[in-house]
Image (cartoon, rainbow, N blue to C red; front, side, top):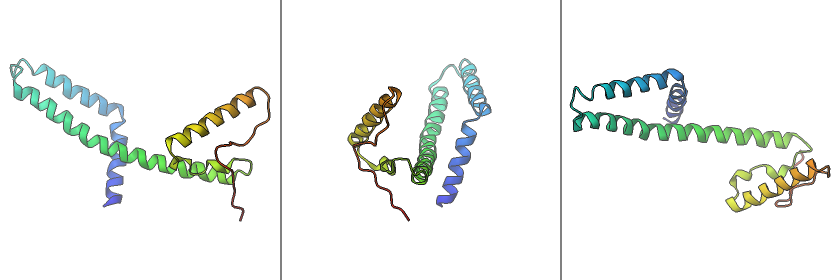
Length: 137
């Protein structure tokens, strides 16, 4: 079931991001707008577009969120692997996506301070918010 949902979410996300999908949706809205006088701008006429857009939006939120969650997880795994593989990289960054917002903010401040120091010609130093450690095999 999960593989089927992932396949559906990926296919839908790819389709939703195409220019032709936008053009088709725009055409639907224009056709709906042009038919307003024909239906005397009735409540049913308004209900058609409101219901359609609500249903599509509701379903797309879950599909897009699923796709973004998987993309983010894959990106974290790839970045963690790169950090682990590069001996000079600070291993303290592995898994920081699991920290609290406050802890992440402290690390970000330190990284920005380190960046300013490097641009000012000072030597690079480790982030002080978390001790770096690397498991050597």
